[in-house]
Length: 117
Image (cartoon, rainbow, N blue to C red; front, side):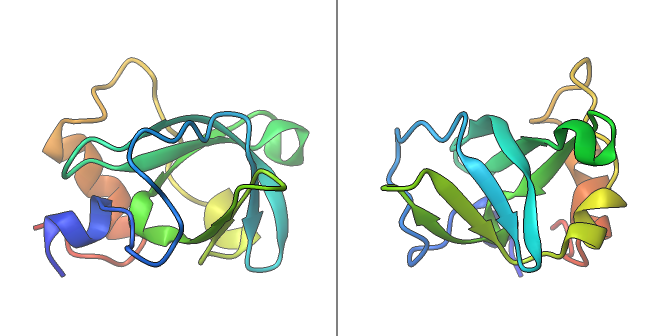
């Protein structure tokens, strides 16, 4: 899997460049996990930052764009291909770190079982 595959939006997920997903609900394969706090569609570093709210005490997690299965624009829901447990145990997103830094992104790529490069 290439870097673009990991951090790129899948062609069949319903994402169009420039679409604002902020505020959309995020559904894991086994239920709701929170809402999109921010996202990027920059080439090679597409991701969602999910605010899990009270579910796991306000943790923010980063999901590579390739984890998005589909986007329900009408109901503002992003469906991802990970379980609630996988998301709960993901490394916490740290705002002070640079999300475009390959070494920072590598920890997420490894966690989600994807080679970074």
